[in-house]
Image (cartoon, rainbow, N blue to C red):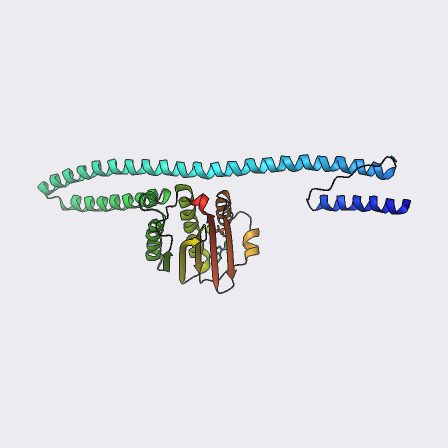
Length: 283
Ligand SMILES: Nc1ncnc2c1ncn2[C@@H]1O[C@H](COP(=O)(O)OP(=O)(O)O)[C@@H](O)[C@H]1O
Ligand SMILES: [Mg+2]
């Protein structure tokens, strides 16, 4: 009888340790009135479990803190970009008008004296000036896509993708089926940045001929998929590569909005990036 009782107590200790080891909350373990060695073990184990719980709580708190910090970091970055882009636009506008006026005046003066060489030089400067302005404008647009707030996500994506297709001679098909659904700023910028990052990855790594981008609804969730027909990748290697922040950054951005991020890839067939956001985060 005593042996049976002993076995049961040891059984309970084992189940306690097993649950602790797999991170589950163990059932409560009580010492008996005998004050024997097994009771000593039970008391020790209870102390250990309490200590573990404290550590786990602390770990969760610091993880929450880190997530909060990351979210803030992403937001601050976007805010900074927005400010910089607005300043660039303002500066460029004023600068362009002032310099253009000077050029007109100068050209008139030169025309009167008919100094051909000077006029040619002026033409070259003019060309340099126009080229730099348009590159700077591109930088400003990249910092903060202006169409995003004006046109909304689907149209901004359409514009961006058709520009990418033109510049890189890549076939890109875009389909959107979200109708009049308005996607608010944070998720819109997240989906826009993910499209940019994924397109950059396709151009850098995939050797793809065709890309399909789809923005739609799946039940009460917003879905973005970007598929290419390139060489595919080994997901394990991509996840393990240190110093690569593209995919990690995308995953983190999506999880901050409570969404899901996944990649499927088949060697020599292509890669598909999928983002799913709950409507609560998207509107
Ligand atoms: N569409 C793709 N097709 C093939 N390989 C890809 C694709 N996207 C990403 N990869 C692979 O995944 C790796 C990690 O991507 P990423 O995190 O964006 O880092 P990076 O672009 O800086 O290398 C890339 O180095 C590349 O090997
Ligand atoms: Mg990348």
